[in-house]
Picture 1: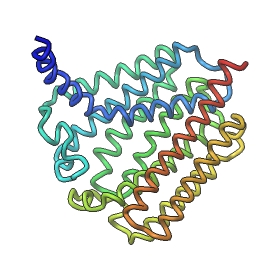
Picture 2 (picture 1 turned 90 degrees about the horizontal axis):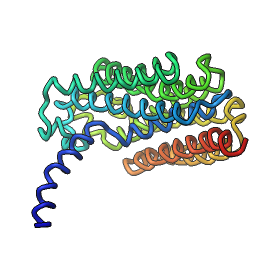
Picture 3 (picture 1 turned 90 degrees about the vertical axis):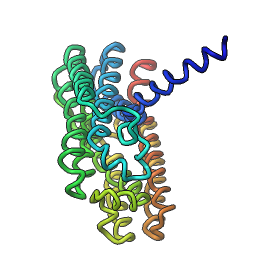
Length: 303
């Protein structure tokens, strides 16, 4: 009897995993933490715990809606790439019907409305812009047309940080803009490193990523240049004012990313491209942890 129940539950569990997979929740969690870091580095009175929870969930839901839209629109090109051909719409695991667009739109509308009601219109606007830039500007308008796709589309992460900052101060002080600019420069070297590793996939799908257009070493040099600007921005005084923990994390993460990028320039192989991609994740993780640790934790538990 117990065995029958277990087997009966498997199709439902598998379907749930498939549906959740289209929302790119791992990326959504990262975007959510980015918004919380933007909140933490912004001087001013912290929102209530309930408001912070609403902000976090709204960013997560908005990001999830944009991720689902991305997979819905790119089902045809996803089938051509080894990395993405198992996605639900590409593989046929989920039917590619217009009903999904209704669900996606409702999720985004709910996230924006909740933020507007619980916080303010500026934070809600940035949450909308983050989803819009990833779903429409990046996915629909730019990805198949220009190598600048990820550069401009990368504003989605910056808008998440600005949403967090606006939750504290809708006027957005200098620290908020510097932090958002740093995230803007993080996205290209992060994604180009992965695109370098998957060059054949993008060539097969006809997507004009930078590593497919430049020589390998030149690609690595462009990535290093972006990384240098990124690290410099994370160490500017407006952000250092958040405390020693932020400064330490930013310095360690920046050093790791720079070291990996320099190695990539010296030897531009797929293995070093993937290593640089992983270094970018370490850098961002340390940066966000330092920001939140210096900001929210200090404000709630120390003062």
